[in-house]
Image 1 (spheres, rainbow, N blue to C red):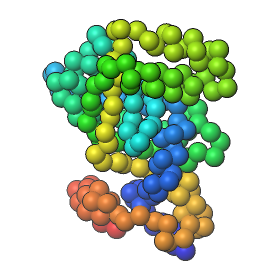
Image 2 (cartoon, rainbow, N blue to C red; image 1 turned 45 degrees about the vertical axis):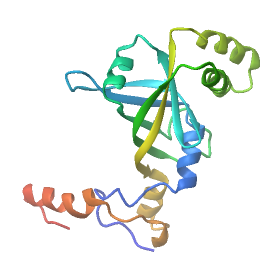
Image 3 (tube, rainbow, N blue to C red; image 1 turned 90 degrees about the vertical axis):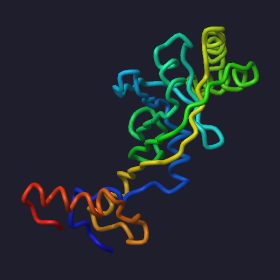
Image 4 (cartoon, helix red, strand yellow; image 1 turned 180 degrees about the vertical axis):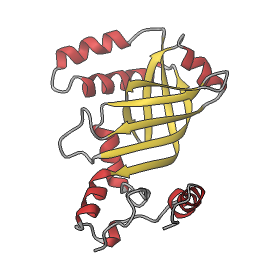
Length: 194
């Protein structure tokens, strides 16, 4: 077992596919990010559903984000394993770069509204039923985000590595940011390259 020699190297702590699936299933909120017409990045919190490897979100069709995503469907979605998740959910975070596709058909609305209401009001059928009624508006649209790339950070692995209790085979490879860019940045700042 090795101990880290540089706290700036974090790409070696990725989620496993099982951890990513668990986080995306259990987490209650995400931040949906998009670009405005004048190229400003913007993000808003949303409740969401993770289904078949896709992220599903809803909002009113007249929101600026709807027009912006229709203009440029490249979005990002960030999820934290800290707030509002099950106790044994992986700690850390996941961010997906993805492509947004809108759905306004009754079949998608039926399964999605029910799934979102049940997730939001776990164990309280009456409140979930009322939430379905609230969601079921002709002004509402549903955004499906198809992930094209993931950035994940398993803070549990990081903590175990710092403690010297993480097996080396649990580490991921150093990504470009840590394998090349870190050395260049340290050199520019007059620090040793490590």
